Image 1 (cartoon, one colour):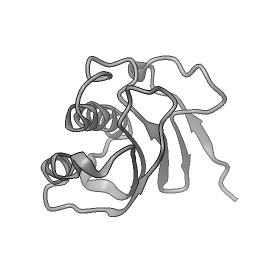
Image 2: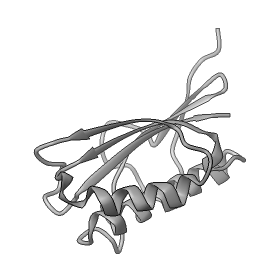
Image 3: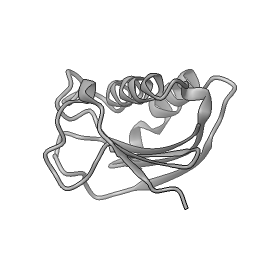
Length: 125
C-alpha cells in the first residue's frame, strides 16, 4: 500500500496550524482549504479573493508538474450568495473547458471575518 505524502509549499508561506497544504496519495493530490488570508486580496471582494486562491492553486499545480486542467473536484465555502455571479465568472475564467466536479456551501463565517471564500481542491496527477 502506498503511504500518503504530506506536503507543504514554501511559496505559500509557513503553515501555523495542525495541517499541511496538501496530501498526495497514489495519483491524487488533496489540497487543504485555501483562502486569501495573508494576501493583498484578504480584504477584497469575493472575486479578488477567489483569484488569489487560484494563484495559490497554480503554485501547487506547477510544483506538482500539472495545471488547473487536472482539477477533478473543488469544494467552495462562501459566506454569502450575494456575490455568486462574480465568483462564477472567476471560476469559468480559471477552469476554461476543464470543469471539475464541484460543491458550493454557504457558511456563517470563515476563520477570519474579512474572508468571503475558501476553496478545497483535488487534483488527478
